[in-house]
Image (cartoon, rainbow, N blue to C red; front, side, top):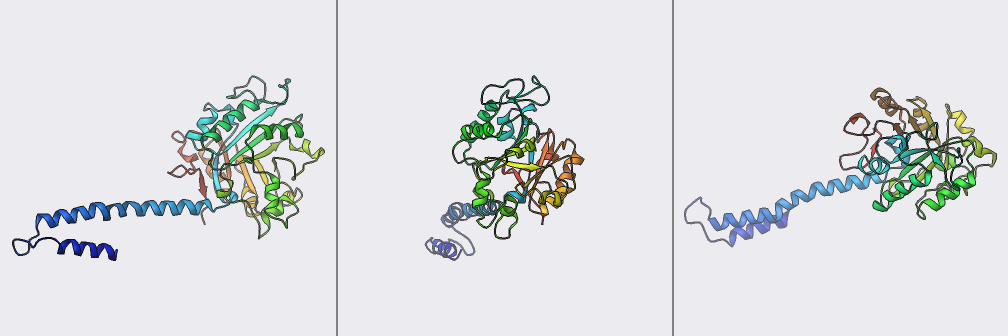
Length: 323
């Protein structure tokens, strides 16, 4: 600013004196206008951009469990295709219901709700993944995308791990073992997110990543059993109390139908909760007030359902919790 003032003074001194007292020459006026145009006005434009950049950098420091986001419930069943949901609606949490019956193609799963033939935008899991990967290729630095799977009881864990591994680009899946590696003192996944020196990863570190979560049918996997060191997915509990959660030390997601007050206790305990069937404004806002981080709804279009919006004006898809 001091340099700018000196420059203005030099400009005035270098200008021929005015022809009459208390007047200013045309040349001086032109010089001053040029100075304002090339120095002062650009600085006024740059300052807001710098402030916006600083705000963006600050929110990227938030952790995964410190934001709320609109999620697509039964994403395959919505009238909007997956690319529209991810790219246009800025949704970063989706869901697939997968089944082996009737006999699915080898190494693949059908995607439908109750019966084969139910409406779906992608018939098989490989088709659904192809659309998700297409989005990833178009926006490789996208915000973290969480994919929930409602799994039929006949699903085999080894086959599902293999499907995940071959479908997604290398290093794009944020795995349970990655969470454990970030907290060497932890012996369980719950410890890896609740110990004071540890915690959920920051959003900036999850750029371009996918988090995979099994929500229903996970009890079948307990027979194998679940292995946080080799499995590529997390498990979601249907617990309703923190005591129930403590009995499941490797489950750090909670899955609940409708707006559930337990979302508040789950969040305070360090877990991430998902509430689904939030298909009216009252239930959606109630789940949000309870502190559920993932708000799953059928009502996706932000123009028709503005009360579902969690994205910022610049497209950042999350909403930070109020202090």
